[in-house]
Amino acid sequence: MCHVIVTCRSMLWTLLSIVVAFAELIAFMSADWLVGKARSRGGAEPAGPGGSEPYHPTLGIYARCIRNPGMQHFQRDTLCGPYAESFGEIASGFWQATAIFLAVGIFILCMVALVSVFTMCVQSIMKKSIFNVCGLLQGIAGLFLILGLILYPAGWGCQKAIDYCGHYASAYKPGDCSLGWAFYTAIGGTVLTFICAVFSAQAEIATSSDKVQEEIEEGKNLICLL
Image (cartoon, rainbow, N blue to C red; front, side):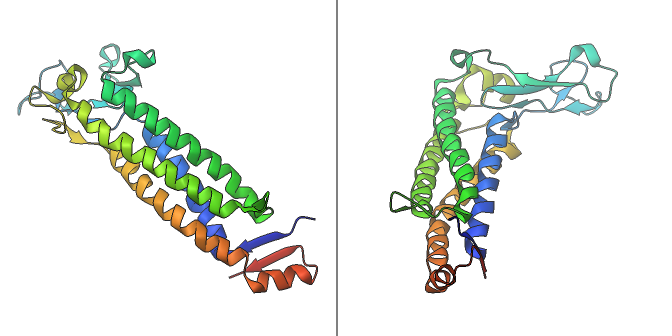
């Protein structure tokens, strides 16, 4: 029989696991990793003081947002999408490695987020605590994310990044570019991933406490504890 056990710590861990997975996935898919130098809407040259309103192209691991020449007179005149039609067309070998490490880490996080929903009903499999297993997987995912984030700036010297950030761009030097929200989101998600890994142990303690066992022995199927 399924005993639905809900505690504040286990519920918080579940919510954080889901938030972290979505945050990392959205950051990975975004084109806002690098924000390029301002350009004139009338051309590709940097915008001058007296020129038309400038815009900032953005560049991600495999995607980019640029001005759409065919929609110059519309308010939404940027075109966003992948610049790489295949994995081999990603601008830098470092970014290819980043894509692999982040994809593996995000896949693990998504699996953990899915499993975490069922921990209210099932706390162990083959006598192994799901919380402990998921916490271990989150720690492993965090290591993959760190590797990806460390390698990503090494690709700033590729020609694609130079086109967006100027000739001063090089490995670990963004040149005229600034870091976009997606990069910071990926970093924040990585930190939260390790927090989730630690918090999973607290969730395990809360759901296996003596009070929970007493409630189960009394025959209660829905157990809610603070």
